[in-house]
Length: 216
Length: 343
Image (cartoon, rainbow over all chains, first blue to last red; front, side, top):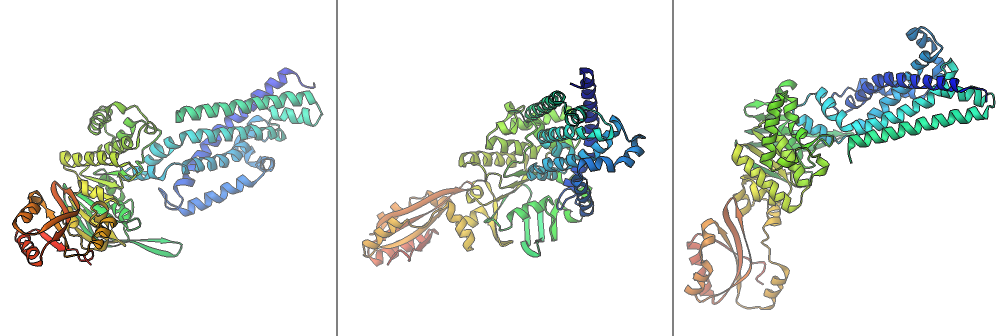
């Protein structure tokens, strides 16, 4: 084995950092966008087809670029935002641009699942669009949103593995540079096993939380 | 008071125009329980949704307690909506919230203070008979209980108008009846004007004061429930009345009459109000030389007044039958020969 346990622990911390921060910023970006995608569509709370179409198109464009290309293409933007284009922090920027639009779509899906009747009842009560979003749509979709975020988080774990391309580090990077490129089978096994545990843990936690919210 | 003036609603979908409401003029007085009945697609849902502008009418006016809604700014409309409660066919409760939070919602939106909300919600839950279910979630309740929550929620802001959009259509007959009794109690205790949209004539019969029949986006018949039930003018109204007041001879009886050809004549006698209490048939049998045979009957109650009809076979000589008929006419009881059955 070409790596020691300290390297693995360090990589693990890097992965957690990358995923945690990019998740945070992705949600800050994706949640409002997802809400806008729902409420600006035809016949919805604040119908605005111009906003909807632009948003829809832009999100599709970001969603269609393969992450490894996005990673490189975003280098100037990354340098502008964090001052450098290499390292764990630098990897967070492309990860946010990757996961943000993805989360926007997931949020859109979750919110569209809310019974239209609930919105109707809210409108009949004289609720403002803001009240309908915060007091009706989001609480009703919460359980489904948690599951959506679980999917997004797991997606981020996968994408962060490629962050090695910009020196982002992390477990995935270790797996690729040692396990794959240097044929170090044991490192490969260990790193992949760690990723499996992380993904399993995230999914179980997500399911548990969603169930808790939904009750029974 | 709710007033519709020349209300029109036209939907446009993929180039096609569908006229849902075609010039509705209707006035619903304060404190009334007003029912609008129609087949699906007749426009009744569009009509009720125009009252609180869930649908914007294409043209025409909606006047609620003197305010012409369609010309009001959005903010003012939201204020007016707080004075209009609405109950839905599928309840439309928030499954993520408890019964308490659901009922409290309109008050929370209006930023009423917590202590007051608590007091009011408990009062409402007590009123609808769910005082013990405050901490339940909607998915733990039966359909009837959910609708009670819906009703309590609609009443939270003490509205003067309650809209019921097929409020009992998803419920079984027994639950329907108990919900209707609750609506009646609301109308009587709080003097709230109730507008009910339904396709079930039994709902109209049970609690409405007035009824309008809607078809093809137009009101084709309107009047007190008693008048429409006792003398429906249009075919659609007759159709609806017959769903709860069967006055057609059953096939088997019809066949029986056909077999025994003779001098019998068959009449339909309508009993309305006090006349329903008179021993008319036995009087006739005693006074005249006719035999009476009751073939079919139906007596019900409309707004606390007995109402019904009997289909009676008169056997006897023409002269005697005629005398009997004159006697009945003198008593101002409606009687008509059912020619279709007498061959």
